[in-house]
Length: 175
Image (cartoon, rainbow, N blue to C red; front, side):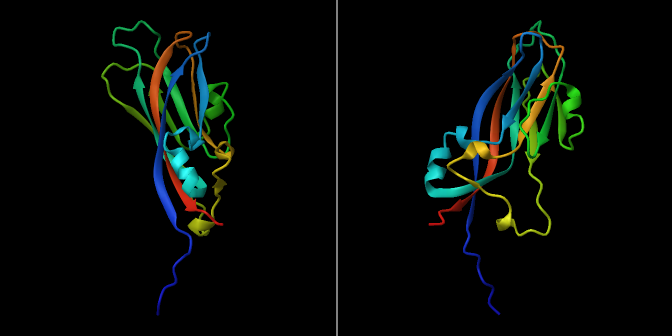
C-alpha cells in the first residue's frame, strides 16, 4: 500500500529582532512583545516566497543593560505568554493567572543571559496543516503576545536588552 503525500509543504524558520525594555516615569516596566514576525530582517524574503505563516513558539533572550555598580532599584519582572491577546498589563495581578509565567530580576550582575520560552498550544485532534494560518500581507494580525510587568524600579531607566526569536512556519503560494 502506498501512502499519499500531502500537497502542502511547511517550511520552518527562525525570525528574530532586538529591542530594549525600560521603565516609565514612575518606575513601572509594563508592555507586550507581539507575535508579529515582520520586524525580522529576514521577513521580506519569506513574504515573497510564502503566502501564509504562523508563529508556533519562540524565546526571548534577555541581558541586563546596567553595570554591576548600578544604583538602580532592582525588582522582579514577570513575563507571561498570552496566546490571543496583546493588552498591556497594568498590574502584576493582570498576568498572575497565565500558565506560562517566568520571573526575571530587573538587574543581575553575573553577565548571564536569561531566557523566556513560549509556545502556542497544539489543538489536539486537528491535523497540523489545518490549524490557524495568517496571510503574509498582514503579519500584525497575528494574535498573542509575551506580556511583562514589574514595579518599584528606578524611573525612566533602560533595564534590559533582548533578542526575540520566533519559530515560524510558512506555507507556499496557493496560486
